[in-house]
Length: 77
Image (cartoon, rainbow, N blue to C red; front, side):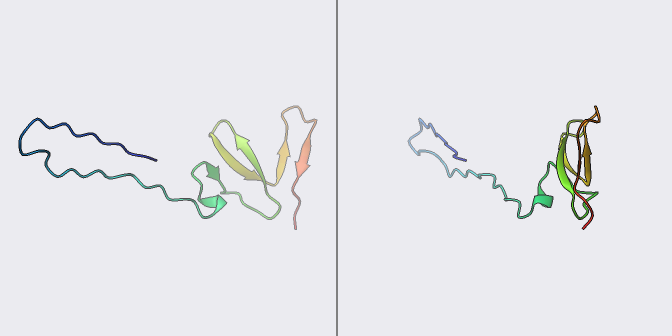
């Protein structure tokens, strides 16, 4: 992220000391550390699914559609 600062001064002394702090972002080191991931039910064979109600990705061992026509089981290892 770039930060641009412009200082205008019409005095003979010129501008005073100016300090600009750039916010730093830390990269997540693991999938579980991401803010939009809920891994409270993390188990062997878990699959990742987006949950619109919580606006997060969740982990589940079984993914089913509301119509029941598709069922994916990550299995137990």
